[in-house]
Length: 194
Image 1 (cartoon, rainbow, N blue to C red):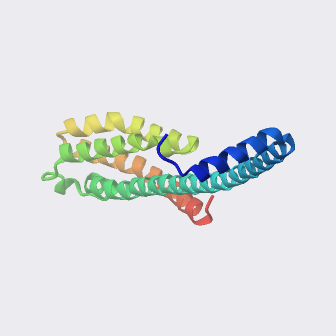
Image 2 (image 1 turned 180 degrees about the horizontal axis):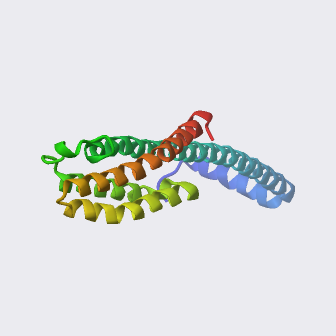
């Protein structure tokens, strides 16, 4: 040990000797230390409880925000299907029921068939967001359009182009209200907060 003041060394020795010779003082000190430790432990537990509640509340808020973001993304995607349904109807109407056979000569039916094929791909891509009823309508539409897409791409006769175009137009037009109702339903879900 270094040079320590002899008086401090002597005083420390006296305190140690008194504590050892007087077990009642040692017991009282141990009781106080134990009590202080217990209070600190309880305080730590209370603090941990409040921190856990804050963390739980933060996790709940984060989950709610995540859920809301997913719901909004689904709404955007379903709105996109509704918008694409209207857009593809506009494209198909060039060879649809109101088209003139005499004006079909310059129209790229192969391009229209590709657009309809892309539309079917979009519907299938977002099929995870559909209710079972809507999924059935969407899959039925895609299956019904498969043969028409091939026939339209291969068609050379103007009458055949109009016939196939009209068939495609009516199938998609029947699907339009279904697409709109699903998009509207998702929007209402977001507005109502469900």
